[in-house]
View 1 (tube, rainbow, N blue to C red):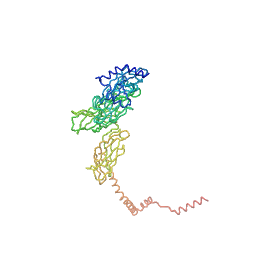
View 2 (view 1 turned 90 degrees about the vertical axis):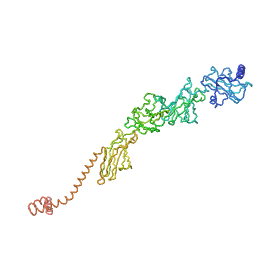
View 3 (view 1 turned 120 degrees about the vertical axis):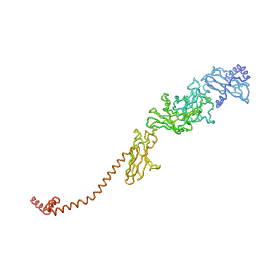
View 4 (view 1 turned 180 degrees about the vertical axis):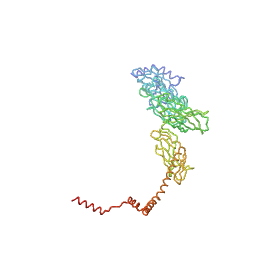
Amino acid sequence: RMAACLCQGWQLSLLPAILLGLRSPPAAPEPVTSQDAALLAGGSEDILCFSRSFEDLTCFWDEETTGMYHFYYWYSRDMPTACVVSTWHHGAGRRRHVCVFPSQDVRLFTQLHLRVLDATTNHTKYWRELSVDAVGLIAPPVNITARWAGAAGQLCVSWQPPLADFLNFFLYEVQCCPASSPGMPCSTTLNPGGQHPGDPSIQATVSTHTPRAGAASPGAGQRVVQANTWVVLRDLQPGVRYHIQVRSKPDGTSMDGVWGPWSQAVAAETPHSSGDIGLCCTTPDLRHVRCEWSWDPADPHSSHQLFYRPPPSGTGTREDAWQQCEEVSRGAQGTYACTFQPKAGSAISILVNVTRIHMLPTLSYFKEPFWLHQAVLTDAPQLVQATVSQGRLSLQWLPPLELLAEQLDYQVRYAMENSHDWKVLQVPRAARKEVLDLRPGTRYHAQVRAQPSGPWYQGSWSAWSKPVVVDAMADVGKGQGRAGGCGQRSHVADRRRWRFQCSSSDAGWLIPSVTVVPLLFSAVLLGLRCTFPSLYSNVKQKLWPPVPDLHSALGTFLQESSKHGQ
C-alpha cells in the first residue's frame, strides 16, 4: 500500500518535477549555505535537514552525477507529499538538491518520513525519519556585549537568546582569544558592542552581572558552555584586548540540534596591572587612604584619574558605583598621589585611568581589593628617652598609633657616627624600650621604626624615627643623648653620678676612724688612773664590774641544796 501511495504521488507530481528539474537555478539566495553544510557534515545521514526557528524546515542532499529525483515527505497517517526541489551547482559536476518545506507542513514532536526516489528506476535511493524539534540549527545570540567585570583579569559577557519564543531552551558556547593572536580561532570581524575599561560609560555600569556557581571560566583561546545568558571570563591576562564570540545550540531537553555559527566578535580589554605603575595604597590612621603611583616623567601632560569603590556585590546599587578621588597631586620625577576617605567596613578596589595627549585609548590600571587593616603604614615612633650608663644605651619610645600598640613590631638600628654600617635589632612585639651594648668612647646614632604584624592589623615598616645621638664616655662608662625629648634623662644621669661620688668619699673615711678611736679611748683611761685614782676606780667599776668567785658561789649553792633535801 505504501508503494502504491508513493507511485500515485509521483504521478501527480511528475510534470512539475520535470519542469523544475529543467529550469536554471533562481536568482534568490541559496537556502543552504556552505557554512550550514559544514555544520551538519558531522552526521551520517544521506538526507541532511535543519530548522532555524523550529517553525521552518530545510532538507538537502548532494549528488556527484546528474539525474532526476523526486522527494516525498509525510507525517504518520498522512498521505505522501511531493516537495518542489531546487537544484544548485557546486562545481565539478556536483549538485545539491534542496527542499524547503511549506510552513503549514512543519510540525513539532511528530515523526516525519522522508524519501528520495530515482525518477529513472522509481526506486528509493535515500530515506530518513526525524522530528523537526531535533534538527535545530540556531543563529547566534543577539545584542552581545563585553565589558570589564570590575576585578583583575575578568570580563563580563552578556547576550540575549536568538529566539524570543524559546528563551530557556538553549546552551551557549563562548570563546575568547587575544586580539593580537592571529592563530586563534576567534573571528576578526568586530561588533561595536565591546567596551574599554576606561570608558566613561563603564564607570557606573561595570559588573552588573555577578558571578555565581556554574559560570565557568575559560582561559585565553579556550571555550565555555553554559545555559546562562551571561558569563564572567576569569584568569585573563592584564592589559590585553580580547575578541569574544558566542554561539547557540538547543539544550537537548525539549529541543535538540547542532551548534550554530559563531557570532561576530566583540572586543573588550582587561585593565593593566597596578604593579606596572607602582601603585601603592596605605592608611596612616585607619580612616584615610593615600595612593601613590609613578608615570613616565617625559609625559608630563597626561591626565590622571583615580577611582575607588567596594568590590562588586551584585546588588547593582549606587553605593557600588566608582567614586573619584578629587585632588590628584603631581610630585617630582613623575610621581602622583591622591588621598581619600573610603566607606568604612568594606574592602576597597582602585582604578587609575591615564589619558595621554593625542593617543587612544585611555590606559587603565587596576588594584585588587584590600582592607584598611591590612594596609597600615604608620608614622615613625617617637623616641622620648635615650640614656647611656656603663656602656649600655637605654632607648624608650611611644607607639605611633595607640590603637595598634599591642600589635606593633619594632626594629632598632644604631651605628657609629659617620658610619653606614647599621646594626639592626628586632624588638619583641608591643615593647616600648630596648637596651643596647655600646663601645666606650664612641658617639652613636640610633633610630627605631614600627610595623603592624598582629592577627588583625598588618602593614609595612614605617620610616625610621629621627636619629638620636649618644656619647659613650670611656672614663666613667657614662654619657648622655642629644635628641628631642631626651634632655631630662641626662639630668637624671648627672644626679646618679653625684650620688656615686658621695658614697665613694664616705667609704674613704671609714677605715682610719676604726683604727684611731680605740687608741684615743685607751689614752684617756691611763690619764684618769694617774691623775684621779678615785674617779678611775668608779669608771672601772662601771665599765668592767668585778667577776664573782665561781668556787665559793658553787659551794654555797650545794650546801643550801642539801639542807632542803633533809
